Length: 109
Image 1 (tube, one colour):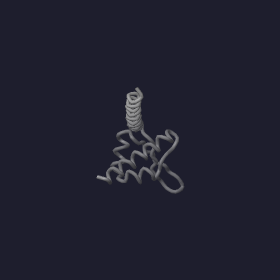
Image 2 (image 1 turned 90 degrees about the horizontal axis):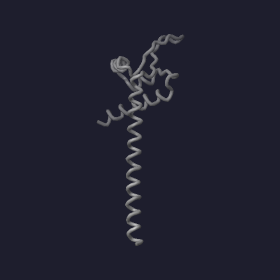
Image 3 (image 1 turned 60 degrees about the vertical axis):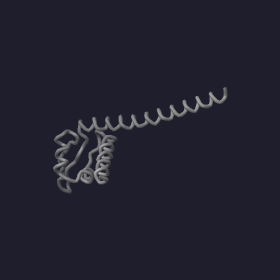
Image 4 (image 1 turned 90 degrees about the vertical axis):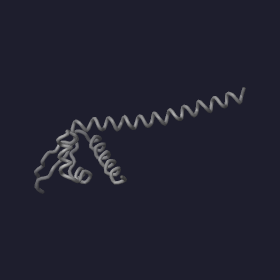
């Protein structure tokens, strides 16, 4: 179970890194390190999460990946998840401060 979580976190970090450079950055090698299996990369391309281009250079032909349009929904969901976590923490802090204020007000009466 821990390996799956590490792989999911690696994919999340990759997509967020690609989002930071969107649409100007192209990735070669990083995607292959995180998503090891070619058929899974192909499915991500087919699903619109990644865009794959073939790049011909003096060193030979290689695959370059860019962030696809459907990956933006993932980034939005992850940002919403982070915001929800922060709101939950702030709500707990506000409730604790309110309870402390009530206790202080009752003792100072």
